[in-house]
Length: 252
Image 1 (cartoon, rainbow, N blue to C red):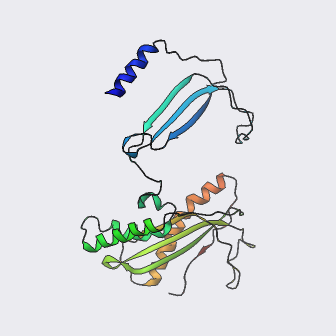
Image 2 (image 1 turned 180 degrees about the vertical axis):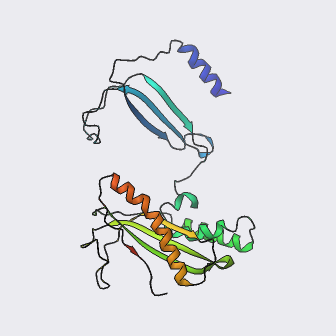
Image 3 (image 1 turned 135 degrees about the vertical axis):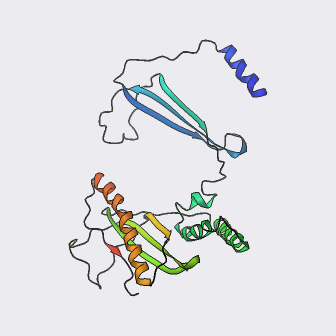
């Protein structure tokens, strides 16, 4: 009630609200902001201010930090919304944290298959996962400068899930360009330096497979599909891609 009274008093004391526009080149600019934990129930608010102003001198490049900001203009739209879910920290929940801590993906995938008919063992697994989150709060991904060439590592675990199912996994990262992209590297060639993952694939395979070889080949197929949109994105960003090398376990 106090909030409503305060808002009505503000409206009464500021009756002549206006929006003033100036001539411009009709180029859309936006300012984004957020207020962390500013709402009730530990929720936050996001906001945006959209206006029309002059064209940047070089639209293809981000402005330097010391460049003067373009002159403001009257807002053509204002976005203000409270985030419904409240987070103590960004990585408080496993579903958010898995984007950075990929070691959690197998556990989350296994537990998700049990949610329709949970048991005491499911509860034990959830408790173990949450204890892992609490005891390892500072998950990070570290990236190093590279030739921006996509590499992938593929693997499979045979009959490791319930109902005789297997799991496929893939690790995608950017590293150095192969010396001869048209030929498979020799067995004694050094591996390219590892880098932070740009994507992690981890999925339980629906079909029941007859051997570890079949599981590894299925994982290769899925990881090849995952690599296709990454290659396209890198090409469109100007990073030419040779044939993508995929490492797999062939001793099955």
